[in-house]
Length: 142
Image 1 (cartoon, helix red, strand yellow):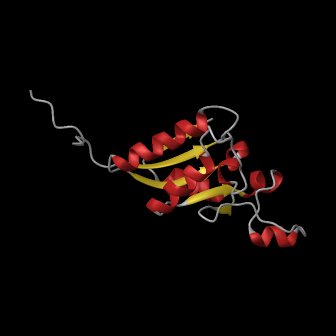
Image 2 (cartoon, rainbow, N blue to C red):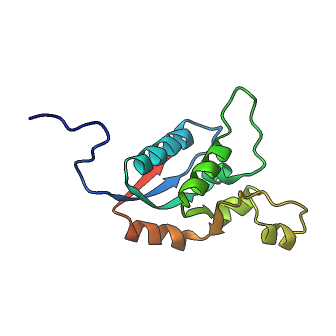
């Protein structure tokens, strides 16, 4: 039987939800999650929600600075989330504990800067439960 051309998808599109637990600097898991999400979108699948939790919220830190010879993974996530208009959420308790704040949270805690990328929102675990219920597949990294 002849093989289909490259890029031809034999299976119907799958709706994924992805959970990222690790920071960009702690392991390869966050970079693997990024590559996974990029590939699934390029293959025509859907990402229902991207959920950063625990140290994974560091992937949504707009103040991350990386050495010139390294990849700025939070900026890569920001670009992908913006390009595809993805639903991206950082766990509220994980984010606040690590200083990842919206402008409103920064004001509430009398801090002069917010640190959350504007492509991601802060929300609770209800958003993760919603993603698990509504996605065909829930994939964890970290």
